[in-house]
Length: 533
Image 1: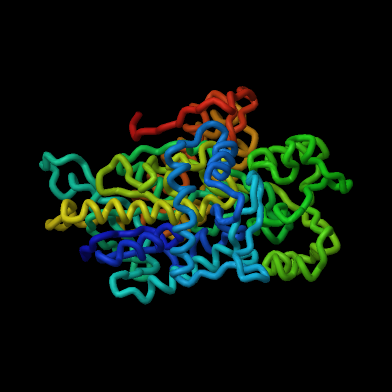
Image 2: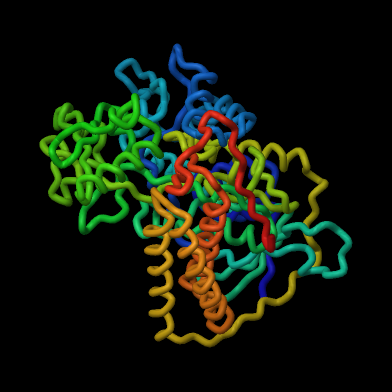
């Protein structure tokens, strides 16, 4: 087995991983691995933009207040302040790296407004901001002499020091990862001074999601198996507006459309959001998603509609070119008819428990972006805080690791050889795909927008059986990416249900029919899971 050493091993090629690599590579060697091609990440799918206090009259306090309100009493104030107050500097980083934002006629940055925000503070590039940011940072990383990017490398499990030296009296620490090179089928070991998980979220745990196909919770599952604490996985945010069409299951209709005056209406053309919240269609995402769910259940309709007809065709094509074109591909002209939409699983608020620098409670292991639970989002994400969190955490992590400097040593001894069956059975892959589908349907039906203890208990019982089956398949068949992803989504699904069962209230995204009350303004408690507890 080949063993490779580096200063920092970054797992994942989204915004958090790329930004960390660029920050850290000025003084260290960075190896970044990604299970598919480097452009494949949730970042590139982000449409709306990035939140930052940039406008005259806007304040950090207002952004903090909006974030806390959306987070429904579960945000950590220190994390919120740290990330919000970094925003202007992180925007400058993006500009320095060659990111473009839309400008007004006077050449100042154009700012839009999204749900839950009291001010216009969203920087954007048309309706594909994430793609523009990812393009620029990936380009910078590919040309940096201290950054090595290895595509088609799937992290299997983290390596801890006790595996290398079982008799060590040192505290358990993460020192690397076993990695499957997909093109050859070989397993390699990577040893590093620190391992940075930036694998994104777990939207593919659900049947309908806005996420890319690789959002299978890999980093969360790996961290859990290694012994790091996991928190608040019951808070999977459902984006209110995903395109509803028989041939499209995951195309996001950005919140920016509602920020520019889009109105949610029912099949009769009646605007309905004001009866659920004073902010109407610009209410926080959890409220809008539940309101749409309630409207659909009351009417029996399969979807609701987003009406953009107050704007001209020319404006819609110019401001939302990607969305306009995609809708036309499905026979929907958003300038003359409302867009059919439904909620879909979007982004996690929970993840590996960390501070704002991404430091976990397992020495040597760091988690950034959606993989982490910093307390920024609380019980519900505020629109466009996600990309900001990735940048802020990457900066804080690089600064803390730079300060630690020489105190972190690379292991000198190679880890144990990787042993795994070489047997492969093509017929059994059908069963693996069936289990994958079963998990996603189970989560959608029982752990969705509205839950109950009975549904959660049924989900838990079935997931325990599935986990046992997955463990068997993992132990007897040759490794491949399908088995690895199935293993990870099964673990994350089970942990999510466990978190949901522990929360005896409704708060933010998590709504349980058995506990429909919550002291929303009161501080909540994190749901923290420890392996074996």
